[in-house]
Amino acid sequence: MDLLDILRRQAGRFQCPKCGESLADCQLEMVARADEQSLVKVTCAHCQDTRMIAVAVAAEVEPQGPAIEVRDQPIDGLGGPITTDDVLDARLALAGFAGDLAGLLR
Ligand SMILES: [Zn+2]
Image (tube, rainbow, N blue to C red; front, side, top):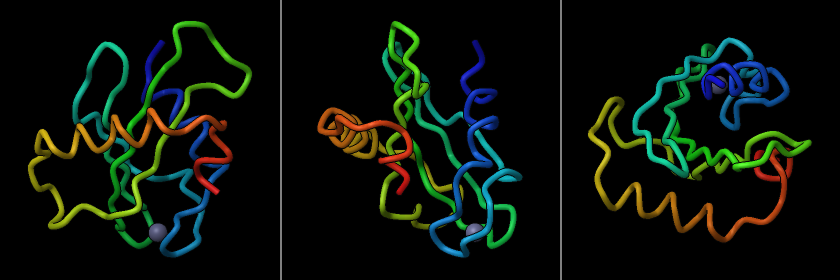
């Protein structure tokens, strides 16, 4: 199962937090991949707002699909390097979230 495929299919259900346009045409880029979760960079096709999403795919398929954590802060400087701290932040944020995808992106 291709993670970016899953995300792209779901992206149209959400709006860019910055410009309010649909994220259906956003760019998705795999930044880092680990056993339990991956970091994906999302770039809005309308306003070019870029943010990181930490995606954890559960071992068993859930009705809501993969749990997705959207970080509040846009990346400083587009294309900047992802530090170890960034990854740890994402892990911590994800560990503290118990809701579904829609709740995360609300
Ligand atoms: Zn936008």
